[in-house]
Amino acid sequence: MKGIFRRRGHDAVYTVTDARRPMSEDIGYRERRYLLTMGVRALCFVLSIVFAVTLHGAGRWLAVLALVGAVVLPYIAVIFANGGREPDSSARFAPYEAEPKDQKRISGPRDQIGS
Image 1 (tube, rainbow, N blue to C red):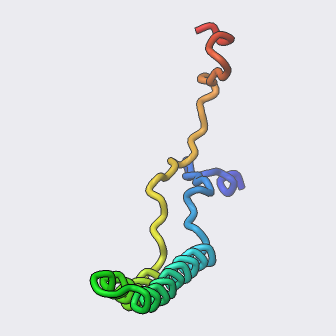
Image 2: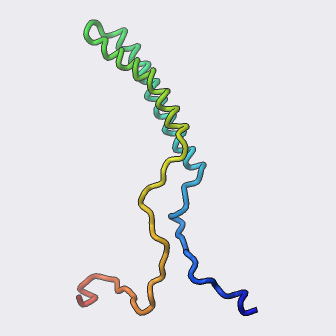
Image 3: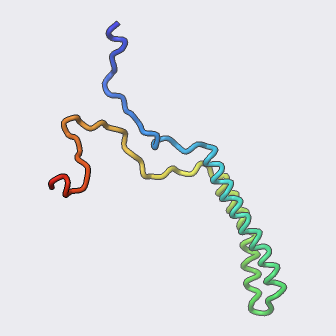
């Protein structure tokens, strides 16, 4: 009976920061980014019409530029929305390691510690 409750060495304990973001949070982020890109596309389309009507001569290049943005942005938005999960931040925390009992840290301002 004694061997049943015995631990096998030290198991690694991971903090919750090592967990990936939930899929719902990732999908929400991609949806917001897609909607923002499509909003910019709609603005480019409206600006291309406004520039084409109001500008004459050399100023028409703004209308063409806005129209190119309105044509290219949907492709970019779809590629980013369907690209898969966003990578997690590279800043990872190390697994938790308990401090030895004989080495307790002293906290507080230096003038109170005496160093």
